[in-house]
Length: 179
Image 1 (cartoon, rainbow, N blue to C red):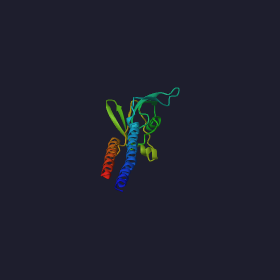
Image 2: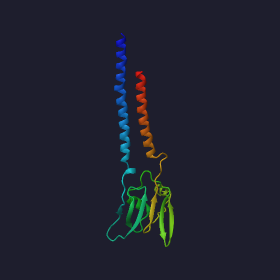
Image 3: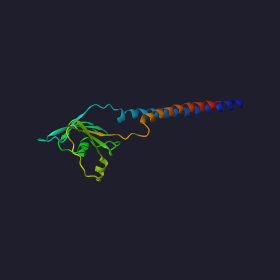
Image 4: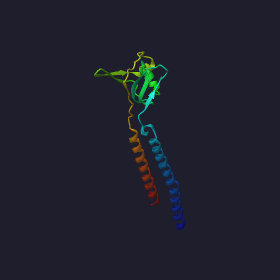
């Protein structure tokens, strides 16, 4: 009877290990896969300089402007003279989802001075403002990104620490259950 009770406890511990360890492993690998897929997101893609020509039809005179920040195709854009800001953003594939459109900055050199023009593109999109900003050659347009409250890198570190801690706690639980 005592031998059978010891064998039953031993078998229960074996079954617990068979069930808990694969579950912990499955959880751990899913977290690692999630972190690995994060590394493939836009934040980690290598970005090289790009140059685009838009609205190039016969007889059209183009000007060069620089578009930086939260658009799908940032870089040097050759666009028709008298193009406005909204056309440029459209040529660039539109704003990204984290673009701050309420304070787009146009840096324009006039003689030896640099003028900063702040534009609320959200108002233009909503139709509140109908003021179209005509761009000038060599303008630099900056559309900032909305910074998240918690950085993705911080979330990745917290997730990995939680996986490690969960594995350690599961191992401690199994060890305690055996004794």
